Amino acid sequence: MTEAGTAAGSAATALPEPVRQRVLTLAAQALGQLPATDIPPPLRRFASFAPGKRAKLSASVLGPILETDEHFRRLVAFQVRREHPELGDAIAEGIPVPAAEPGEVAALAYLLRPDHWEERVAAAAQLPPEKPRADDEAVHRLTEQLDQARTETRQVRERLREQVTELKAENVTLRRKLNEARQRITGLQTDLEQRTIEATTADERVDAARAEVERELRKLRARITELEAVEHAARRTAGQERELASTRTRLLLDTVIEAAAGLRRELALPPGGDLRPADTVAGVEPAAAPIGRSAPEDDPALFDELLALPQVHLIIDGYNVTKTAWPNSPLHSQRQRLVTALGALVAQRRIEVTVVFDGAELTGPVQLNPPRGVRVRFSPAGVIADEVIRQLVRAEPPGRPVVVVSTDREVAESIIAMGARALSAATLLSRIARS
Image (cartoon, rainbow, N blue to C red; front, top):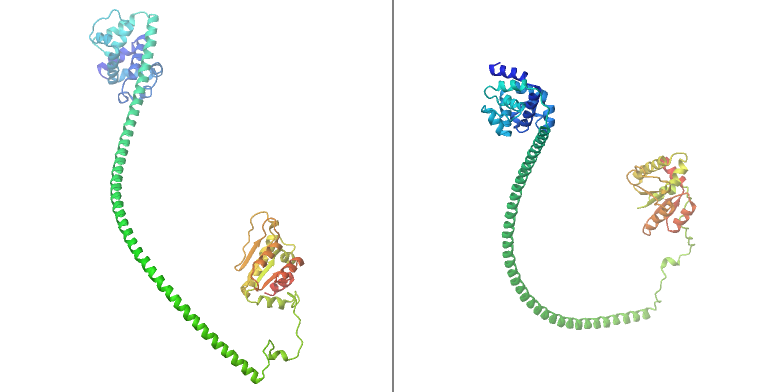
């Protein structure tokens, strides 16, 4: 340790408590005015505190640093001398200040370190402690308020500086956008002028083309008038020729008819009628077969014959068949078993198959995978499957063979009346069983 450091350490240790407190207060006030780079790291977190709070919380750290860091002590002394210029200049130049408080003089002497500053500190140590005066308390309070106001002013200044920086950046951005907009406007104006010129030229070309079209139109109208006159003359000539040809044809036909009549009279032939040679052969004519009753409904051979008809459409009452074949199975299982069996039938016969299920028992979307060629329909809300079957039969053109599989007698009678064939569920099940 240097001699100056040894002297400083011994003097600091001998500081009276009032002087030490004043030194810490002055140093804490100066701490708020120093740049962050000049503040030792242990004290940087106290720089933004209020002056009173800063002096109280940083005392345990600030005192030892003032004793050991000579550079920091000089920076604090410089700032304190700026805050107290008259008293600081007098103490720095060694001029006695009898009117000043000895504790204040000793604190400034400790920080400024003029010649013989140790004597002033020692003299302050020998003085009895004085009670703080009301004026000193007011000055201290005003000093703290001033420091707080300075801190707030510095913070406001920093915020304003940041706002000014942001406004400047925003101004630069706005100027750049304004220049870009001006450039676009200039380009648009140039393009508008060019397009105006092109539009004017196009108008001139349109006017010229319109005049040319009008000239051609007048020529065409004159030509049309001429052709209409020629057509009228040709029609008049053609009518006369057609009338002459009709007269000739009528005369020729009358001649032929009269010649045929003379020939019939000469040969004594009977008059013609609807009788044909086959009508003279005796026999019993068969009675007409009733619709849909050419064979028993349960005849498997009849079912195969119907499936062999060209373009046959097989319509099946779904639940009518499944509840006959698998009454104890769940509905979803009945549906899947039926459409799977019908898929094999379609693969064999290449026919059109539509299965209709009653949709009233559905509670949600139906999970069903019908094979290719099997159409599945559910009756909509409020409509039974029987009515959907009748609608399918009505939709077919007259003459197309339609076969409906249902044990419901009412359904069978109604579709037979519409020209379709009706078979029972047992017939279809027996045919599926043989597949």
